[in-house]
Length: 312
Image (cartoon, rainbow, N blue to C red; front, side, top):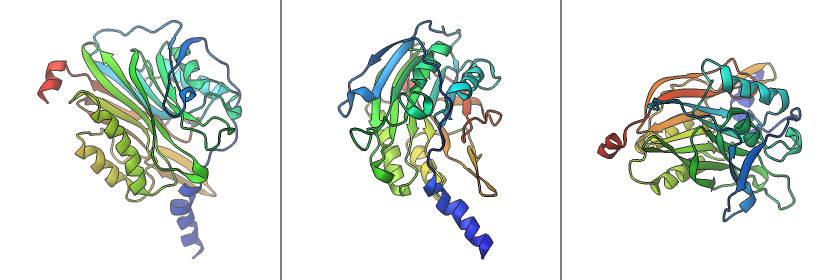
């Protein structure tokens, strides 16, 4: 009976109790030209900018490297390690587009570091960052999501998900368009709520598809992020949702999250990369980078020509 109760806690109750833990070391701010973009909900919670020295794309541009990573609000030396991996790692180095989750901008635990701006300046990437509204006006700013790209970001949109989590907590996604050669690509970085029903979570994910419906028909798209699919029925329902919308993923049932609870190491499949109109030629999960409780996902995809897109 004791073992049964332990397993119940680990696999059913504990995911509902997942919260952010102790603060990370302080980091340093970067030097980036930035602009604030107005939102109907809160004009201060959508930011975009470009680096002081942008990295130039290397032709040909038919294949690009995509990364999705929940960095768990890392700062200081741990953030430096992430940046160094994005520079030189065999699997993660020199990415074309990066989608990040749990990205702080103005929080005490991460030393008030504007994390997205710092990474962008260090790597020479354009960036956008968004966060949900805080539950109360005088609350500290919430953590957010980010997209970083070697190409400029246009049509940037903050998507506040429906349905509140504990203590009126909200979650957010970010959409942006990247033009690679003559082809537009719609990119999303998403962070779904942990402690809501799967039905409500599917409604959050549907918000991404609703935004995509506003783009030109057959626009190639990639949805990346921590979708918090820990429930037993989460994976098949998530797969059906995106498959029915014309998406596919190169990843199987590999776990992307790992954390020790009591004496048990638990792992879940929480993070995803979904592709529409794109062909994955390689992919993987980098389990060597362990500064977060998530592992980064990466894939290399072929960018179709506009003619091929129109024929789909």
